[in-house]
Image (cartoon, rainbow, N blue to C red; front, side, top):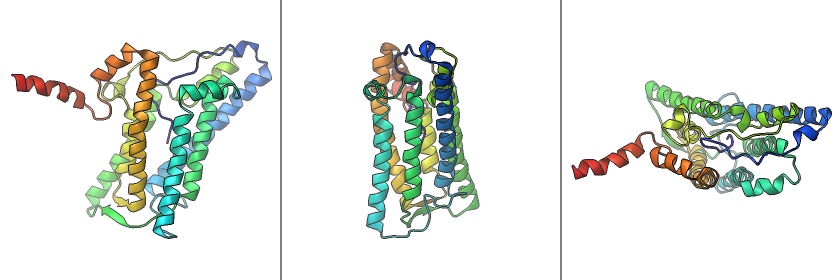
Length: 276
């Protein structure tokens, strides 16, 4: 999964490093960022095949090769490793400590790299568990579910570009550093999809995980666990966004629903109808 984020990312305070760094250092940092981004792209494409069961040697729903209990314990452990890494390294308090060892321009790229490696471990060690929870019988239903799942992937990608894809995955940071410029944070904005839900990126992930023509036990464990993680992660993320943007984000949160479009508006209008 791509990194967690909402209408804005939470960057570190600008570091006065770029102007003092030598040209070879700036080029090296930029090359590092490119490598981390290339690894992410490969992992993202592999994740699509892994979850949608095509083009990869071991997918989410491959036939089981070992007993159920060891398999589910291994899989839950792999998901826990990813969730802990993905959440802890995203917290501002961790970043303040982490950047004592990793230069600020490389922090985001390093986060992307570690997230990618956690996913690689999950893909390599995942244990299929067999069992079918549901299976769409008609061709129309199967095509519809596959299309909705594919739409989820498109929403994920679009959501990252709406809030600056290259900043989210560390390329903007290393590019500014390579040019001898200090990093400056992006301004708060809520473009297109962010006007309907506060977390369209998560909506895309949930669609990609849940819309499948065949839901196996392994797929259900994966989808349910990642859904719980997303719902918990949103609470921490919004707390950070409130700390960063105060009343501006609180007003946005009051106005725009979290995950379900138009649900906030309906919840506001319902009492008015009852009063009438």
